[in-house]
Length: 354
Image 1: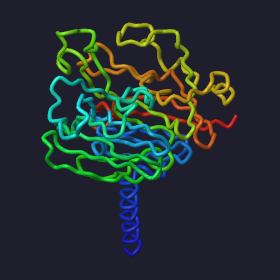
Image 2: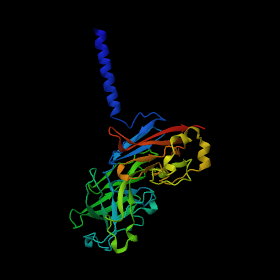
Image 3: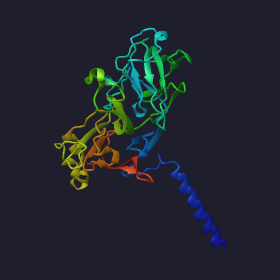
Image 4: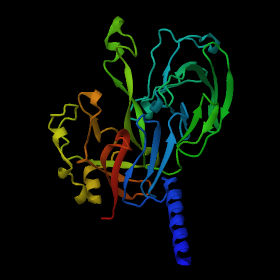
């Protein structure tokens, strides 16, 4: 009887031990594992991946609107929640009271800091920011803001509702990492990036349909042109020297949304994943672009309403991480969860030693 009780307590202890591990999915990942980044069907989470440590860090998308580069003067806006900015003609902050007739701009999905919506920003120039959407898709409204001071020691900004109410002036001290993230909604700096990461799976605001400037007077932004949707993308940490070489056996075939196109009929059987070496990284050449992986690993097929994605599992990405280690990465799926929902990218990776 004593032995039976001991076994029962041991079994219960094992159950609780497993439960505790499952509540901390960011730690204890085996190197070279097959991992699923739980972005969620509404892409409401960003997942940072550190290959050498085998760690994933998940953060909520709906926590910031502006990000200030710590080692430069670039400003990013949160395209993962459809944040956009417009440019009033007025130079007096108090004179900005409406966004009527203004066009809103999004950060480009290529991740280039030279082409962000706020590239070329100037001090004491009012801007209007669309705060995007919350985790339920509800619009969060708009504010006006301007940067009143900028130096290596921090940023000072002023913002308010368009009617001038709820005015705030605040100083933003740099945080550790590539960027300092700020929430205009909560008036606070928020920690987003882990100190070490190689790439992040995130949503990007992607324009569908025609650009409004091509439609002249018939253009109705957000209605018949310049319509933006959220799409999953991978942004590499080029701030920390991460490079990516892409091995695509069918690089000459067009990537499109036709289910019958030649590229969309290719399978994992054509992948070079098992045979790739460090020398292949050198032969192909590593790209430092933030979108070196981007959205090149998946394609939503026609009709888009069916939600069917083609995963290009025959493509292998050789990643040189911050510590000059080499890993090969291959995406296997985009649907997961209990109901096989979109927003659960699954990939495998292996360390290359030769």
